[in-house]
Length: 381
Ligand code: PMP
Image (cartoon, rainbow, N blue to C red; front, side):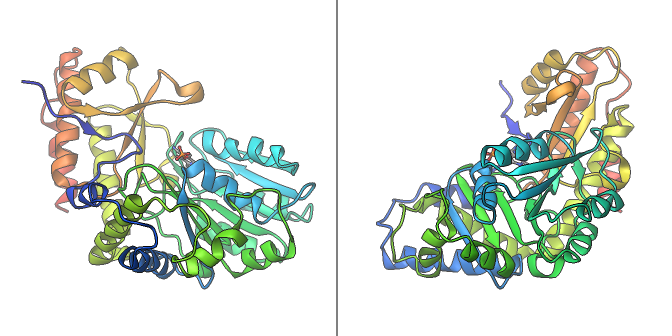
């Protein structure tokens, strides 16, 4: 009999039954009073959970659209912006900003390490940067930026807005906008929210909204905050058709989050990640991200000698677990394992056990039980 496939890539993450059920509901008119109430509740919950006095936007799209929305509403041609890049998704901001006619400076780290916060502060003193972008967790490297510290630094620069890409972090790593000095937080539905792909989510703090106002008419249309603010305040109004079922799915995801408690959710992610990472190391793997800045949402796992990427992932899929390959220079050298969102202990134990069986089938015989043992020990601590 074939094994069921557990999708443990870093997004989309497993979607639990109660969220799937929302996707399967009969679609109603977007003006339906019950849906309008639900949408309003979603917007209110996002502002409460991620703590901003500003606005929340939920539109049909993906994380990349959210990235674009975040930039388009706070900049205009020839503004200086600083991109802090810890990998592939940090780099994505460079082209995105250049295409918008912005003058882009970049601070890059070697993959698996961070740009030191002092270096960011030094750079910010050089010019009047109108925005700085930071990828909270870069999915290509498994590095988590020290966001709280960066927020404290950026607060010293009145004109510089902090834009955070939370696609691989939001709902798993703490992000409180107004307290942490985050002016724009962009994210998507398919990772730690545990919803299917298809929603671009953007939160904008008061300073970002002031900046948007000061820009007058912007070039972008669909992603203009000013077009969407009336709808987010009163979803009975129309600008673009809202993805009704996805918004219901997000509502259920937020209900699960409130039931768990956001702080508990953050703690659970730390416990799960550290257990998973210890188990992977017990099996002889090494992780790309330096220990002090390792993400809780995924692990970027380097192969030991003698293991070939294509074969490893093929056998692992036969054993019932799907993981992602490495990006950039790490294609073929690494696999990426997501462990975020609404996954439980069954998923984690099954995943590590399937990795053990895969190594065993590929000739590494002394692994059976080792990873599961370590994982269990850590989870029960
Ligand atoms: N930023 C990060 C950190 C990501 O991990 C991703 C997707 N893997 C994106 C942006 C882009 O999101 P999407 O694929 O939903 O457009």
